Length: 255
Image 1 (tube, helix red, strand yellow):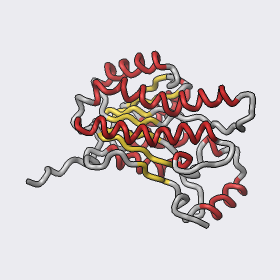
Image 2 (tube, rainbow, N blue to C red; image 1 turned 90 degrees about the horizontal axis):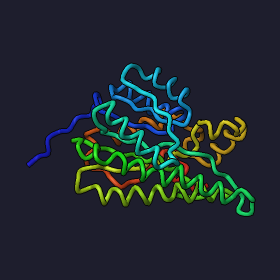
Image 3 (cartoon, rainbow, N blue to C red; image 1 turned 30 degrees about the horizontal axis):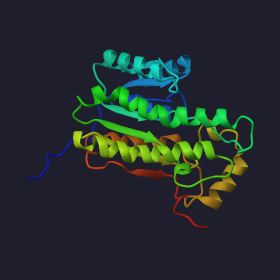
Image 4 (cartoon, one colour; image 1 turned 180 degrees about the vertical axis):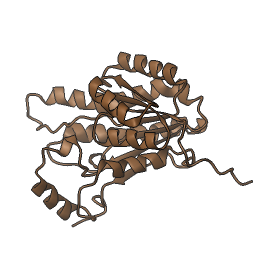
């Protein structure tokens, strides 16, 4: 018997986006708001969150949260569910830059911060949201990983380890939550124009992109946000456990 055609709209859905004050998180929040979703905009900086929430309109609220704080996650997620009456979508986007040489005295600190923000926090956010995701008829989780989770750049082991973990966590969660109809996918952005890449000179961006990507340019946060949107649609009901590179063909190009 044919499966009824599900909706291609997230209008009225309650979505949480972490790391939403800038870059891909901000682009995702704005796109979801344009599509009619109700938004919980989360970041460390409350003022920056409030600015993004204002851009998203009356259906958005700002929440300050350090995702490395497990107790704070539980409190904030419960508050979001109370404020909005439920949770349908979780986008784990918060991240930190973690370049560090192995023999750097700060390596251990950077390692723990990288895994805390970009891996441990993901499972904590999922577990905190689960009671409400289980009540949704189209629960969606998207974890933002990186092409650094599919390959590696020298001097970047904390970030590579965290993002590789996100890819594995996504697969494990997809298997665990699949019987409940909750889909879990991850996106692996390549070279994207965000706060993390602002320090790279335009000349070096151009050289890298022409040498490494098929499209020969850096991507824009909005280009990642549109793939995130595709994965959270009710109609995206039979895709789960995948890691999708959004990288301009970086992983496809050998030379």
